Length: 305
Image 1 (cartoon, rainbow, N blue to C red):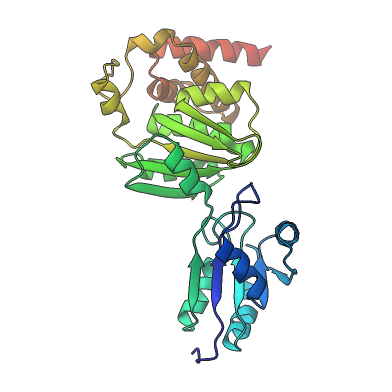
Image 2 (image 1 turned 180 degrees about the vertical axis):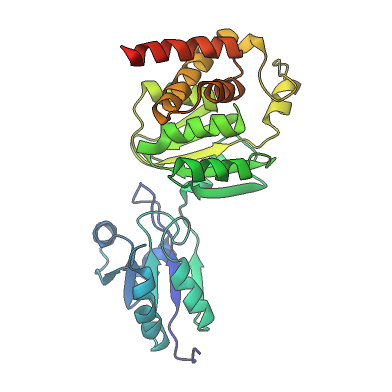
């Protein structure tokens, strides 16, 4: 149980790219605390050096947080204040820190969060999609089966959803979104606040086409419209089938064809049954099944050569 001499655990949000994106309060706390618990000490040292703050850092990441937490709790109970920072953004939000915060709260230790940068919030407010309510999914499971089950569980959610993704998994995730949720509006934010910042706005199918032609680089935040997208599209005048699929007008859409080709290529590599692959691709892109099947045949013939 904490005493009146207990220190405070500060959760300090740090820049997600631009080193100027840090509050005066955060800089003061980083100067005053006895220790800075950092996800990556090398990145944190660069931030501290940039702002002329002496480095008093200890590594706390996803692989050692459970083991390090008792040590940090003991120091807090002894009266030392500690700042917890992640690589970038707000600690505990798809980053280490949840276990340490839990133990501090259980021990009666004061926990104070300093507001600041977050890729989640930054991408959401710039997306052009409704900002409330919103569901934050963080990183999806990397295993295809588990990822598919997660997406199925959230398919009927009517409001905006936000997902984090690494560059090497971006296309697979976009294809999984097409298969599970169909074609919806989305915004894909890349390298937020950095020199090569990009915010792609369009549909999931268009995003598949865009990032098939342009290699995904950097960290990504996906802001995806909820299940009401098909109804909104219909209200705007675009033909939509009863099941939420686009009608035959999409049959000549090059972006839809490219999305179907990308989806089917992945299905072919995974050994998905042809009927199931064609059905999912047609549902996701709005193309007619016979058009999708022709794409499947051309891919199959190309793979057999």
